[in-house]
Image 1 (cartoon, rainbow, N blue to C red):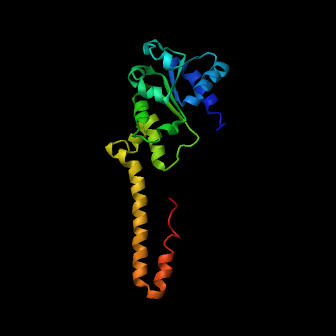
Image 2 (cartoon, rainbow, N blue to C red; image 1 turned 180 degrees about the vertical axis):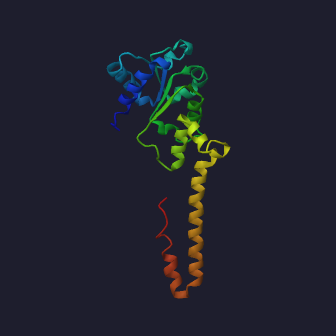
Image 3 (tube, one colour; image 1 turned 135 degrees about the vertical axis):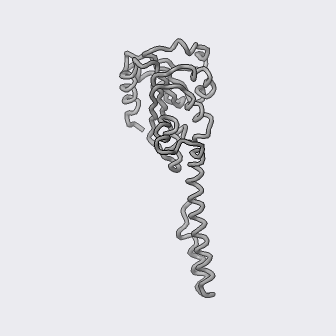
Length: 202
């Protein structure tokens, strides 16, 4: 989106390099851009594009100053190896990829061990507030715990949002039905014809 998120994140990664290797999980389309930008603006880092031919690399070889860029697909497939590394920093680029906390990519990134996490996205909420909740669960679950939202019931947060909307629609339908019954024969068609006026778009 041209917001300069990558450059700002690289500045953070340079500052945090002494804390250990960094892992960037990003869509395939921007992986090479991370490598290019790192070499240009953060020459003290050692960027590595984690690709199909490199998947046999021993994760234990990653050290301070290493910047490993992996796609969401490979992060899911190699979650066992990548989760054994104690990453200094974990960055989720285009973090809306994990907006659904129950998907396998979202579960995979939550398994990664990292001292510090960062989510980059220009669209933190695409459908409902459950998207934002999922991002917080991926990068700072401690915040949800402090708010009392980290227990098993949190799995139902996105569903609760949709359930509340369905309940509201149900109350509107009941109100219309009562209005039609209370109206005389002539007014009934007018009340019924206005049913779609206050209905939310699908």
